[in-house]
Length: 483
Ligand SMILES: Cc1ncc(COP(=O)(O)O)c(C=O)c1O
Image (cartoon, rainbow, N blue to C red; front, side):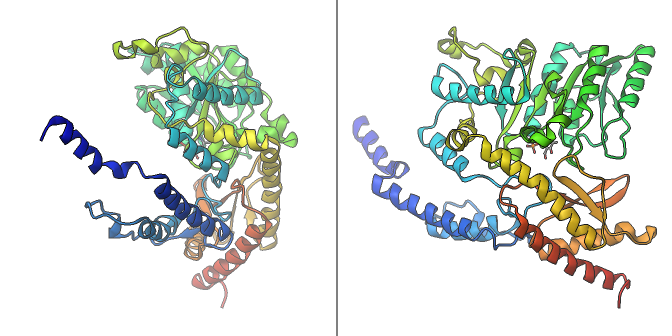
């Protein structure tokens, strides 16, 4: 066979990779119908299914299957197992829901396969992406000169921020062991992970005491920094949270900024969960001082209800971010031009990546920011509504929450209290109508409620109350506390 014939024959054999318009319509229609059936029923399906046995049909063994079969397996064994993250009843960990406009943006971005890492490759995509960063900077009152990056989530965003802090303060070699980080016992574990990933495992940690609302005590922070300085150590980084994962606490940002500034430390704020509540007027005061951070993380896949896959980091010192992330390479020489704006790849460990900015930009263009703000306001009130119901049922409640994460427990004899509440959560998970998770507060097992999924409403809470009442009754019987 001639080379030409051979090529033509091969082209025919992989033509399946480029469906015709008719085939595309058929595929799209199936996905669209599937999405409609799923979303139209989203209020009625359980938020959690503890069954984790998944099908052998996931196996990739070159046995072809049609889309109908695949969708039915997907419905049963992907959506139907574990947490239904799009459900209004997802009140565990940090939910968001996943707004539809973002899934359409993902589709658009994937169809034209924009290369959003480098300005030269897709100036339009990079402009859109940087425009979302500008929007976030304005929201947080960061200066024009700050830079930012859209990441896959809060963990990578925190990693980028801490890398910049490390590079700015030149924490390397023998300096590592003498340097000190100050953080809350409630800091998200991705910060500990980031410290290790960036080679600072041997750094010293100081865990700051908390007040009764789980906010860091500035007096303890100040005292520990001073003590370390007196010992000849090198205080380096202060990490605050604007909304902890455990309790939603907002640390005293303004005072922490004062202390960090006084001692010349890098001040980082993890606002991955709580940051967007700054849009709500009643909460603005609690965020005072946020604009003084050196770096900040804020996750649209939490507080703006986007489907999973979008965090963001903002850093004031551009050079500090470029230090580890900006590289030149021979094969990239065409892309090295004087450009008008930063390329995402210069500010992140990633080069090629999904054009993730569109999933944030499109909904903001379509709806503006107002519905997001109102939805967040609604979630704060809904948290109160849930807490009132729990109180009426006889539960003990954690302190008045700063945001929309709160916790409760059933008080009984100290020796069995943790066991009782663990069992109670087991019954709640078995039921699954609404999903709740748990945490430990001073070694006490408590049940958490995190109200952030945009679909969560009063119906959800009313269903949760019925579910919890049932679970409590079963638990009380198990522990022979009622007949
Ligand atoms: C406060 C906080 N920071 C960081 C993270 C990590 O974010 P991600 O899961 O998007 O990596 C989370 C996740 O829940 C969080 O609640």
